[in-house]
Image (cartoon, rainbow, N blue to C red; front, side, top):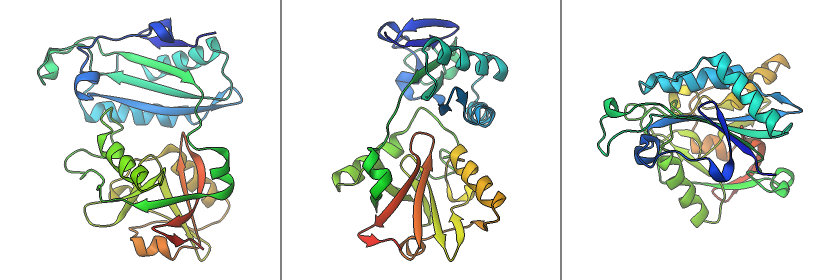
Length: 264
């Protein structure tokens, strides 16, 4: 059975789920998105994901044509129709159909798309044996140019860093910011453990405010572990006792080697 895809209030077989080639989401990456997980029929931190989606849209002057409650219901309905209990949800909002020019004032009818499916970002052995990553030369976007806190449809910054890592034989890579500090990986936030404390780059380092990142911080603090959101350098990574990555698609994955240095 083909999964159904939600587009603007209607469900389509995924083979028939289409938008216009004049949509500025396609022409210019003009739009926002969220990746969300469902576990045992319950959407993980849905409210936090929707808050971030709305914040991203507000930052680029994009009006989402429905309420958060309506979006939540549409997500849950699409999961139910597709019979997915444990799965991955991709919510996309595009600027809509416009002209071939940049002017967003010529766009109309923002497209709301909800895809529910399954995802396996890394093979199972990675979660058992750990990742080897490298630091790439591609810097994370400067916050004064395009804020990394906006989860936009333009992911070229991450993709170029991903390609650089893949060419070096690593399926994930660590990115620095314009100050030379550790920012995040191409699709995941980064954590270190040193002397029993949990360390992670602050929002100001130019990172996405990861929902899974915040869940880890909340759980660590609830357990009594000290969590520091502080600027980190490559040296901090090299001398860490442990390193792991977090993300909606990746979940929590251990890192065992960075730039050929064994962690721990």
